Length: 109
Ligand SMILES: [Zn+2]
Image (cartoon, rainbow, N blue to C red; front, side, top):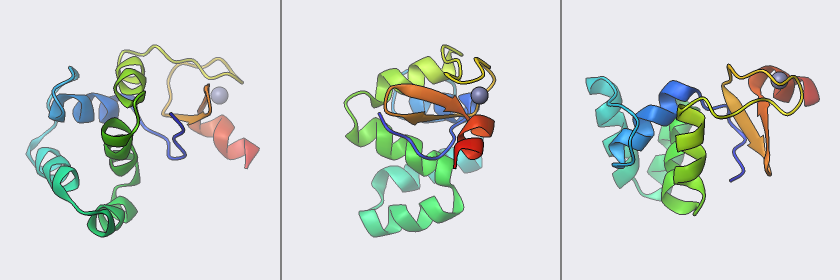
């Protein structure tokens, strides 16, 4: 799964809960946001993604990427370490199979 927007452990857990794959429930606003993203057509999802890029990236990943659930479950459980600095705090971006923390990802750009 190739994510280009940093996704935090909390966001991964919220999105997993919405789609019934574990994690934990978000607050009321975020639950409505995730329902809107889940039912949005591509242009509306893109519009929501401009305001909430990490949630949109996680929703797209879990819906359309076969590895999305496993990726978010691993992220939510703290199972990632940055391949550059080996930090485990995230939020994480994946480039191919190599997760990078947000700091290292920005340093590479
Ligand atoms: Zn790092």
